[in-house]
Length: 503
View (cartoon, one colour):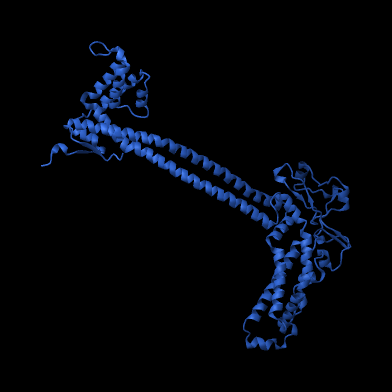
């Protein structure tokens, strides 16, 4: 038969307090007594001697009954001079702590408080600190991830900035100035396109021959602008419209203005008079304009609006002219002074005709590569030699040349330059857009620094929690052993084990 004295007593830590009350080691009213004892302890702590052991004992933990016993032992040495012949101490410090110990021992109040303290440490305090430390660790990882994302985001914004600058054909050091400088190169680039258009003659002849043969119509009506540019180059719109070389060309002046202090007018460009409205010599001679404004009483009397044009000076009337018309013969003014490829309408017409020619050549090339049916062969037996003598190499060369001209007029850089020519404020929009990317990169860089700083704070907090958890676990293990030893003495030193502490 097994010796019952060696059988251990296992107690679940979460039910320790119920176990002590059920076995009448403690009473149900232990909490009210503990409140009175805590008041005595707080009063006794107000007058403590300077002692290293006491200072270490009271640091970082909740004072319980076993701490009070150690304090009494220490006071026996520090207050030894106050001890009388009967072994009693006259020191008030010693009396206060001896009273605290006596109150604890009444009805085993100390055992209930220590059990409650151990349960709270095991179930709440230690898990809460561990959970807080885990959150700090997760926050550190999250901050590092976010900081890395900011680095990639800033790099991406800068890459997009320089990529956009590359598409515009600028370096990106001074966007506004570089865009304005690019506009100066547009006329020479368009003149080169007009010169290269001379190589379109074989394609134009092929297209005209096909239209004349298939549609039985005059080929002179097809591709008028391409044929003109191919023969004459990039001339003025006036020459294209009238067929005569202008004696005088009055091109609109393009003037750059300095950046204004007003944000709304920053970087505006004076593009001059584009010929949309012109003034008479009489208007130029006059400094003031009489708009024929009448007083409110006169307008009321007439029961309507009185324009009073007759009272205005004849030389002060504005005359709005048609674009490019009603000007002296031989003078190209306003939009008529622009070249065919500079003017938006004629340039669009030129590109449309190029695309029409491109589509024709692409279909012709497909017909050469594909199988030809008997009907087509029979039909083209009477076709002109220019249609029958085309080879794939010739047509492919024509198509490549047409596509090259289309690409040079419609690529990203040229489109933006045309927009700048059409709207000076487009420079401001492009500049703001590109600067916004740099601002986003700077903002992401500041966010990265903020995330790193937050991660550093979380790491510091995590490091500060480690010693707290270690100290609380150490004191809890010590308290567990003291409770086990105390209960063991009550059962003839049978082994007692508190299970489920996780310490």
